[in-house]
Image (cartoon, rainbow, N blue to C red; front, side):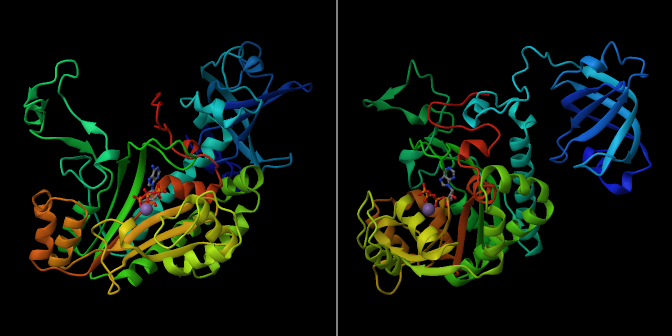
Length: 462
Ligand code: ATP
Ligand code: MN
């Protein structure tokens, strides 16, 4: 019976005949007339040790020269391991080689490669320990997301990837077009967008929020989980041009409910990951970011800190810290400020709220002070902003005023405004960047190393 290596490594498998299929990580030949082959199939961090005896018919011709990266199908009996570091091993009765990886040119030989180098081999890097571990954590966080929201009664909504609503931040959107770039149709000295595929300009989505609000104001509680695109030219360790965002949106939720949900969701993901990816997390703790396990455990045990933007600015001003960008009330907080607040001041996650209206989006609910909006950002150590959200402006007249001030045209948002015309309700939501969450729990320094095929300015290989 074909079983996963994860299963083969469990004590319950001892005494069973089984088959495993995977890729060779190492091979050692013993003078006693047999070889140890370590095989990995991606199901877990650890390899299964195979003992292949010289009496196997293809021992001389194939097994004794098996190279790293070769694919094998192995049948045998699972036994309690005599050796250290593993509980089980398999004594092979058959080792079938399905594909050789040449020992001279397979790039992933036993030596350690830098993450930069491995990015050039994005097609092979999932076969390394680090990327296998990242991939399983990414999978667990995605699964937790669906479990958490489904158990809370949320409805999963698929919002469009191509959007024709000329949304806020059009400057940082990728245009979607079928117009011939070498022969653009012109009208009155401008490109005639009416001749484009959709009869108007279209873009890749930067957020599913506006459409999410449509569904929240019918279904109650919804979430989206999909790819998101930003054409901003930021070459940082926490920005991608294509990333995955989870955006819950809840009717009848106010800012405090929103904050509470964000905290419970983050804790749920961390708890699931610590429990179900223990082996992978132990690797991150040992090799990538010493202390990450203990830090996440503390996060689980403590309520998140809350600070208003105004309080945060006071903390920064009193910090005595030299920042590259000076702080003053009204300034957008930079990564260095966010990291000071979460790493030095709070030493854990912190939710900042009530930001100046001028630095936040038009749809955020304005406070009675008329200067601040009901925004909330969740900041975490090592990353800075991981979640951005708000209570939305549900009052039609106020929203129209805010749009005017932002230079937006009412007719472009007619359907969004209709939500306030017909049965408006207080509502709120937020967006979590999946990759930043993965960075946070794994300690991986560069966001390019937590997504299978990173897209960044100047780079879209694979
Ligand atoms: P930042 O200021 O860090 O660039 P933002 O304020 O532009 O982020 P939002 O529009 O609030 O980001 O998006 C919500 C969440 O999506 C962020 O909190 C972050 O987790 C994630 N995110 C935003 N931009 C990116 C990006 N370019 N790459 C990866 N994740 C991103
Ligand atoms: Mn934000």
